[in-house]
Length: 125
Length: 137
Picture (tube, rainbow over the protein chains, first blue to last red):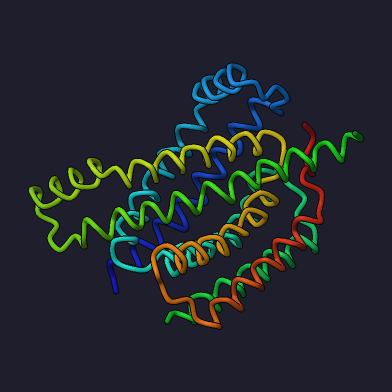
């Protein structure tokens, strides 16, 4: 159980925190408007020059290996939904780290997602 | 097309790609990892063998390719849309994961789990009706 708890914590905390850093990096790059393949490759290269991107990718890699470990222990339809507990953490991060306006409607949606995730967890066959 | 309609269209399109490639990658990884088996010992040689088996598996590599496609769609959409919008909106993927797990991996999905997935989808629907971008471009 201890091993599973560590894996879940890494997946949720490192995963969400990494995504927040990646978002900050992409906001630094600016809105992508050209979707031709070469333009997309250029965007990826530009993104790779932003420090936030590497910080985010490092944390996401940690979460990814924890996910691999967890998938070797449990069913995918249980493991993946439980990672959605990061939604509450993500909405807070969006509000305070990225300065986004998280409206009541958006919070309601996030709350429903969390409830749904809990049911998915309790409904383990 | 009005600017807001255009913004919603390209946001929905990339979210769709994320919802397809993300679960597909997860299911492929799961299939690959189940074939490799559980990591029973944390000794250096066992770990090395575990990583060798993982990264020589074709199924795992297809899973990684699918997740890479997901990631590119993900960073592109984050260049204009809120993280607090994209993250919950993309959770429709959980329904797809359960469906793929049920259809491809023959996993059991209980009625309670289906109910949870329906509630997640309702949450996604509500979030999807908020503005994708609340910060200055």
